[in-house]
Amino acid sequence: MAIFLLFAILLSTSNCVSFASSVSDEEVSRSRQACKLAREYLAGTTVNSSSLEGYVDPRSSLYSDRVEAYWSSNCWQNASCIVSPASTEELAEMMSIIASTNATFSVRGGGHNFNRNFSSVGPNGIILDMTRFTNISLAADKRLVTVGVGNRWGTVYNYLDGTGVSVNGGRSPNPSVGGQTLGGGIGWLTNLVGVTAASVVAAEVVLADSSVIQADEEHNRELLWALKGGGPNYGIVTSFTYKTIPIDKVWFATRWYSAEQNRALLHALFDYEMTSTRDSKANIVYQLSEETGAPQSFVGFLYLDPVEWPSIFSPFYNITHAATMINSTTGTLSDLASNYYAPQYPEPGIPPSRDYVVSLPHKLDEATYNDSYATFTKYAKQAADLGWHMNYGSQPISKLAVHESSNTPLNLTNVEQDWVHVTLQWELAEDDSTAIKMLQELGKEILAAATRHGSHLRYRFANDAYSEQDALSSYGEGNLRKLISISRKYDPAGVFQRQQNGGWLIDRAQRN
Ligand SMILES: Cc1cc2nc3c(=O)[nH]c(=O)nc-3n(C[C@H](O)[C@H](O)[C@H](O)COP(=O)(O)OP(=O)(O)OC[C@H]3O[C@@H](n4cnc5c(N)ncnc54)[C@H](O)[C@@H]3O)c2cc1C
Ligand SMILES: *[C@@H]1O[C@H](CO)[C@@H](O)[C@H](O)[C@H]1NC(C)=O
Ligand SMILES: *[C@@H]1O[C@H](CO)[C@@H](O)[C@H](O)[C@H]1NC(C)=O
Ligand SMILES: *[C@@H]1O[C@H](CO)[C@@H](O)[C@H](O)[C@H]1NC(C)=O
Ligand SMILES: *[C@@H]1O[C@H](CO)[C@@H](O)[C@H](O)[C@H]1NC(C)=O
Ligand SMILES: *[C@@H]1O[C@H](CO)[C@@H](O)[C@H](O)[C@H]1NC(C)=O
Ligand SMILES: *[C@@H]1O[C@H](CO)[C@@H](O)[C@H](O)[C@H]1NC(C)=O
Ligand SMILES: *[C@@H]1O[C@H](CO)[C@@H](O)[C@H](O)[C@H]1NC(C)=O
Ligand SMILES: *[C@@H]1O[C@H](CO)[C@@H](O)[C@H](O)[C@H]1NC(C)=O
Ligand SMILES: *[C@@H]1O[C@H](CO)[C@@H](O)[C@H](O)[C@H]1NC(C)=O
Image 1 (tube, protein in one colour):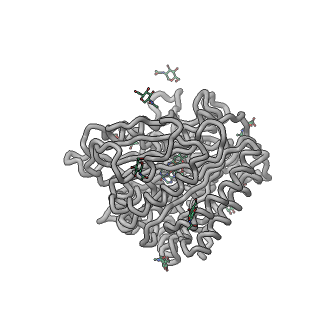
Image 2 (cartoon, rainbow, N blue to C red):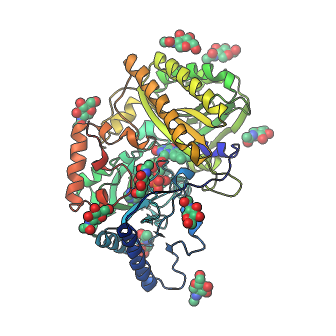
């Protein structure tokens, strides 16, 4: 989420991805055929058939907006058409068209995954865009909330505001419910109730054969388990039902620091982590930047009770901050989300950037932090020299969070840990391979340090990992085997493996 704020101060220029590849005429004609059938079907079912709201192709005025609806411009790719079904029935029909034409496709939720091809497809494929699945309903007893996958988390927090309950969704208001949950997910309440997916109790899914099924504790129980972090291998989810958490007023504040304080912030992080785990109401967002202009390191403090400046965060309080990002506030999680809110990217006035992230979970160990930070500063300098932006982010995960996530396939190790991630932003397509290589090398050095210090963890966080990090394999051999057999059961023809353009696909897992 904080990354959004940074966009406002980043300078970059518009760019576009040139997409050169040799494709068979056959592939072109398969996707054209799929788009033609989709358009005919939608024209026949839309009340105002001349509007065809849910269908765009290169002839439509909305086409380029839809092509560019991603967080990272690295993902901008033309498509034969982009279809946004308005109901489960329409989606099922699209699935049937895709399966029968053998067209290449991608499913797009909020478009926030930075891996090219996860939710974009290229000029010879079709995008199924889920953004019209926006229903939300809170059960009368307020214990469960059913959320359409196309909602952004900010909308969900707003909907629940004032009800006395909330849900452990994403921290940023902008990623979609569907994509964020299918990767496991870190939320504001993770140290209380585990990953986002751990709160899921039911899902509605459209399978490759276009049947619509319900997965819950009584029906398709193993499918429900697979959806709690196991990626897009089984079907397209239309809604998730989550357990709510009674929560009303919380306290939060966020401070900017100059880069000179980074060492002190790193030390404070470690001190905080060594004690915070006894208090599952404490949560931080944390970013270090080496940039020397406007201060860009920050720490956000969140306490899940209306307690101002609780002592749990005291390791940070004596570090001189340069500015306030969010003043000390007692409010709801919706207030918190809207404080961090920047309208859906891309938006006017915020230039696009290309982004890449590496997931580096490790156990809490000061020597690992020190070495990681040294590696980070080395690469951050190289990045800064090129006019790029690199950030180091901490995401503390407590043993309690691990325990609460045991109903998912993630197979987290039962220790206090930090799902560190480093993000790189640059501007030009021609720099893609250099930038990506730089971040991958940084990642390998940090993981080597963790191995040296005995703090290495096998897990890779699917929502932060680049595709070669192979998140599904990191869940363990046994769990990967289970995910494979569940995928084979629900998609026996392998439509999601063969025709889907990208994502955490079991057929692409290394199984090591
Ligand atoms: C600014 C920012 C802040 C973030 N903050 C957090 C955070 O606090 N916590 C966290 O956990 N993650 C966070 N993330 C990571 C984010 O959750 C992942 O990038 C996630 O993949 C985004 O989901 P999406 O639907 O928006 O993206 P998309 O790119 O649209 O989708 C991601 C993947 O999910 C698949 N998919 C999406 N919807 C469906 C569906 N309904 N059925 C089947 N497959 C589907 C897509 O095909 C694709 O493979 C953040 C990312 C950004 C850019
Ligand atoms: C149908 O949609 C078109 C385009 O959006 C619009 O111009 C027209 O007025 C609509 N017609 C009706 C009957 O709503
Ligand atoms: C999409 O295609 C158009 C026309 O061929 C081209 O001008 C544009 O650059 C392409 N966009 C992307 C993102 O590749
Ligand atoms: C949203 O809910 C309404 C009313 O229950 C229903 O008719 C509609 O089909 C739902 N839409 C989606 C996309 O699920
Ligand atoms: C579907 O398309 C793939 C190429 O993407 C091709 O290898 C395969 O043979 C096709 N299958 C059928 C049944 O046409
Ligand atoms: C993305 O998908 C296209 C089309 O299927 C393919 O040619 C390309 O190699 C893929 N790129 C990556 C980075 O996976
Ligand atoms: C912060 O500073 C105050 C006053 O200088 C001091 O009493 C306190 O011990 C310091 N706290 C920490 C955690 O260093
Ligand atoms: C914080 O509060 C002060 C005093 O009310 C105000 O001047 C300042 O603008 C606020 N800062 C932010 C970032 O909201
Ligand atoms: C980590 O670095 C700090 C200096 O910033 C130092 O005080 C501390 O001893 C180092 N710890 C380890 C375990 O290397
Ligand atoms: C879980 O991970 C451990 C290693 O950390 C591994 O030994 C075990 O096989 C994994 N379990 C499953 C079910 O994959």
